[in-house]
Length: 321
Image 1 (spheres, rainbow, N blue to C red):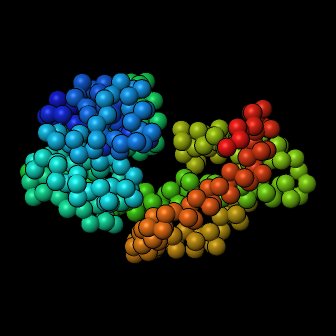
Image 2 (image 1 turned 30 degrees about the vertical axis):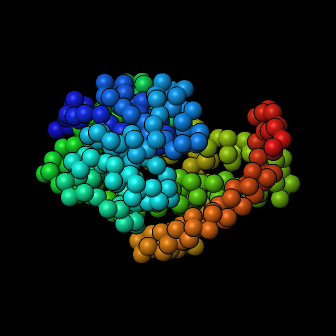
Image 3 (image 1 turned 90 degrees about the vertical axis):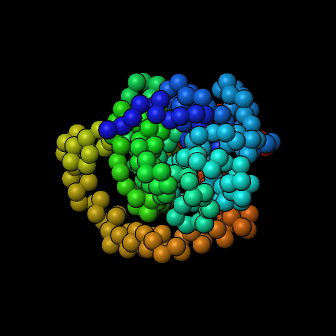
């Protein structure tokens, strides 16, 4: 049974004030906990935290005396800062991670008396914040990486309860399962697959002579409404809510688009994750200064689909620079 937020004794240090850090810090504060925000000096997170009513501190200072430390720093940043942080964290503190990547793919040293747990909300930080503000909850995955006290599961549940996730459901899993499934979902569906699919569909229509704006509205803009239906009803329920023509196209053309080649690509992506090849690739990219990421993000911003989006939705042109 999930515990009340009061089961988290002492201050909670939230390290990082990005997508998850901001939402979690606000939810924890609303639950009545003493929350300290640790932010990297000179980064935008400092001003965002101040605007939200926090007094951000340097990371190592924020963790001193904290009973719970939520490590919500970017995956590629946490390992480089860990030696300094580990030396400042209290020997008996509970460490909470929102994603298992650094627990599974990296070597982080923890104290023998520290519980190390995973509390991973099933959605982006902004969604976590929105549903809790509505008095609802967002499900979360829970896992234990190190149980020093025999109470690690209990403490993970207490933290998840303070976030508001116990209002929905808490799923016990393992660090490996959460990490591998999360990476696979991001790469093949939620981010990589979805972006590649809508851009390819838009390019196909425009190459065939159709209006870029109409192509955008059809293949990208409307995706939200069908995704909402899928979220509410599942695949079978979505099919109950569309026209007969759309249903026939779903059943006959969908398997052509996501056919054997796509399934092989998914299997290869999963194998890269499970064998550590993806982690090695990501580490090499970070060590080189992220040139591939920067180049492809910039190319994506220059893609004509972005101009079509602005025209289709009546949005202003971006400011130069």
